[in-house]
Length: 131
Image 1: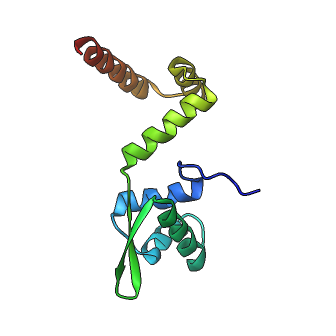
Image 2: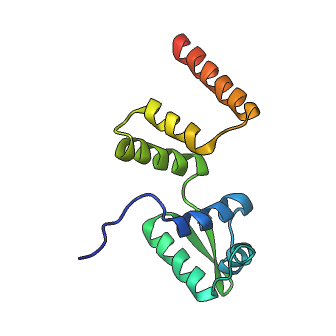
């Protein structure tokens, strides 16, 4: 049976997207160079992955000479929002407090991060109260 398509990127696809979000539109070779600084990959593997990502609508591609230049079809914020929403609903039954509690336990933020989190909560409450 075929694996169902999921709109969220796989871990390998997310690595490619992160390179493109950081560098902007890139060729397979440019993406491969960045990815290979972490773990060696074959050119054909990266090319195949990026072609599949284009078919899934994660990447756009435009010809440039004998190569293609790939760009992200969605912003980092949009993809991450979709991924967090999916995690919130599937793993935490829609409970933001359960997600945040689990995140704090896993991440073990230092005092500076906790202050930033508290500031974010305060700003969220201020905006919500003013709406």
